Amino acid sequence: MKKSLSMLALTVLVVLITATFSFAEYAAAGADNFPYFHLGAIVIGGLTILSLKQKYEKLYLSEAAGSFALYAVMIALFTSPVADAIKTMIG
Image (cartoon, rainbow, N blue to C red; front, top):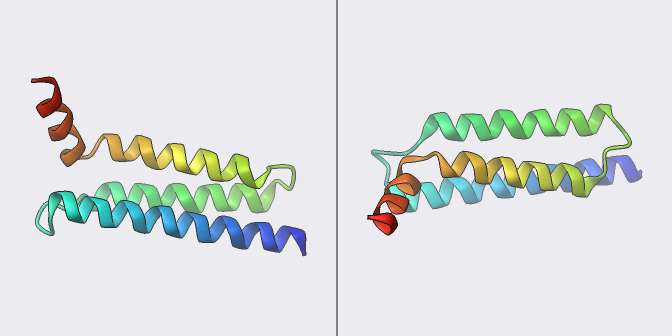
């Protein structure tokens, strides 16, 4: 029961982080410049984290959630709208 509840919580967290990324990128870049490749990378990363959590029972929920959140931030940093915002702040 504890394992299935933990997997459910992680699945919800992965879906929410992915949806937040999608909404933020759509709001920043619009429909014509949406980074589909980055969205695909986040989905594949989320599925990988979920499968690792399923396979290794000693992996804590907080570790899996934290690693996915950091992965999503790393992917978001390499999108076009974030790079343009950083260029604007620097120059």
